[in-house]
Length: 324
Image (cartoon, rainbow, N blue to C red; front, side, top):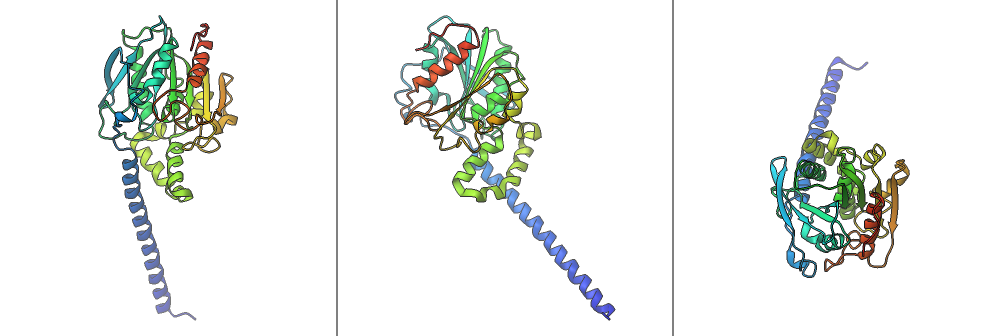
């Protein structure tokens, strides 16, 4: 028989093992959360572009009006560009992560030449807007909601149709506000994602491979702490399915950042059951990458995409297409 002393010794050993394991788990979780915060905050640090990167696109186009308004504690700066043609339509252009309005200058120029006024803004922690950091991926939802609230309640904006055109993180954002604003007539998402975590993981997997999935729970937890579960988990697919707003989802065939078969909103097309949703897989030599679908290295816009976008918007106003 096992002596009572050996039993007691065995229990003490088990307790030590369990205690040691618990401490190790706590240490692992603590280190992982600290590392996650450092990594997340470094990814979403403040972004200010080098305007010299876009010498050709920066020529000539000037904003008709510069507007400031609040998004939470920060003041955003937006720019209204008027079309030379009389119009009752406004495109709200929402750029991608780590981009500024100036980088879409020629895209804006071609939209205004096509007969649309355009409003675009620097999101929190970007360019001319306030913010010590970009905060996180879902911040674009809050910033876009603040933008649309301002437009809808300002006498400066009187349009029959307001269209949303979003690229990358902006493509995710424009879909995620569907159903919250009655002023929206149609939406175009270019190379967007379904959820914020898709956008984060796309970059993480590209950097470190499948090892990135090991940190997924901590990234999700930290993002949820920053934004709350609603914003952190908001799904573009879900918003599209619950809305009757016409939406065109455009995806580059050779997108190097958001691959068409992984992470992209386009990869969820079988889950989208809205009768008002359309899809376009764009394939054109040297113009079907993540950014090149809209503009090249010199900032010059892709006129084919502008024509397609203008046609989609006009189709949903009943206006005759007069784009370039």
